[in-house]
Amino acid sequence: MKAAVLLAEPEPSTREFLQRHLADDGFDVLGAEAEREALELAERLKPSLVLSSPDLCRRLREGEPGRSWDREVPVIVLGGTEADTVDRVRAFDRGCDDYVPRPFHYDELLARIRAVLRRTSPSLRDRLEAGSIAVDLVTRRATVRGRALTLPAKEYDLLAKLATEPERVFTKEQLLREVWGYLSLGRTRTLDSHASRLRRKLRQAGAGPCVVNIWGVGYRLLGE
Amino acid sequence: MKAAVLLAEPEPSTREFLQRHLADDGFDVLGAEAEREALELAERLKPSLVLSSPDLCRRLREGEPGRSWDREVPVIVLGGTEADTVDRVRAFDRGCDDYVPRPFHYDELLARIRAVLRRTSPSLRDRLEAGSIAVDLVTRRATVRGRALTLPAKEYDLLAKLATEPERVFTKEQLLREVWGYLSLGRTRTLDSHASRLRRKLRQAGAGPCVVNIWGVGYRLLGE
DNA sequence: GATTCGCGGCAAAGGACATCTAGCCGACGC
DNA sequence: GCGTCGGCTAGATGTCCTTTGCCGCGAATC
Image (cartoon, rainbow over all chains, first blue to last red; front, side, top):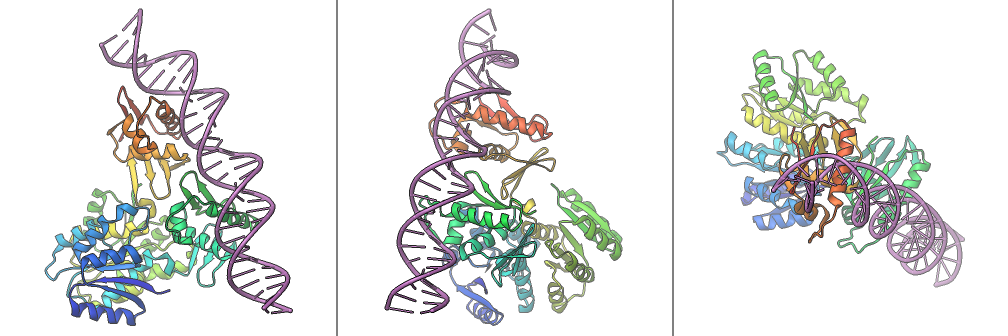
């Protein structure tokens, strides 16, 4: 899957330059001119990465708390020409992942983008592991201690989601939204039901207790 | 818990400078002079981060496949004085997470270290601490001196609330409102009951007196 | 195009366990 | 010394999770 990069660059020629090159290098690029537009796109499309000005970075982070259970979108700040150390440190304090001052070499920016994505986009990895469980995102196969496991789509998706970050507690809302695509959750038992079947299959395959319910919150996959 | 930083810096004065400053800023610093030593330490102690030369970074990554099940240790490369774009890109290709050319400002290096750790050490992220107690908001786990503690939802929520601001006194109204969602409080002993059980578990886990009642007002979590 | 099979969604029963309440007793304030 | 408040325990209550089974739909097969 391609990584989606939101490019919030006001300056037209730079924007077009980056848009073209990043597309050539295999990214889905979303260009945005105004801040308003960029914030909206970031919220709606959940890009894998945002390239932004220092100020927009701050506003992206401010907007987060409302959905703080989500992983924060990574941001690389394209700094001003005259930015000094103080400006850089400030940008990092506001939560950016990297700071690239202008003028920049495209090659280095690309390398830094890839470095950030390596860390922040588990979905771009092709293999997830948690204890004795391994999930191959390319072939959509799950294995327990190397033993293959046949899982229907939804059960696989659920397992893959949980495995993106073992130990982390995912809320039911999160899972229903991101695995099922439910926007509002009437109270449904669908998730419980699938978690149950997934758990049974994992247990039969020889995995210990791994899909764990957190009372009143959601589920977690144990890492060991 | 402190983050452990492996500092592989051959130049003595720089090494001592960084060692001192990083320790002041709350890191466990492991200094290493020779590459051989650094590789060994990285393998054995699994630090949260490595500061290294470009060459050592390569060797760290080469050594990885053997324990590929582990998350790769993040590396920040301290580049040479004369490094150009090509050198930087090469370092990123070899899998480093950031590249800081010399001469560098310590403040910026520190900011970059923190930015990398934010992404790579989930256990250091979104974490509240008060004395020997640590609360991980992502995994919903509480620990006393590193020893895990299994807490039911409400006890965990209560502890997390108190830990948002150690030493601060939270009134009972506040706690019942913000943890339980009670709007009006008939006199209920629910809070006392939970505080009691939470206190017992913390004591059993080896924490000193920490959940303290303020007579006629509410509760506080001690900071030390 | 009809049939079969499997999957996804849903509902109900059952059980587990956190939560709440009640009560006793000790501690603190006055 | 009295009244109030808090610590603690045990039992009742209720909620939530798990399990199981069924139904409808879609895909694959014939």
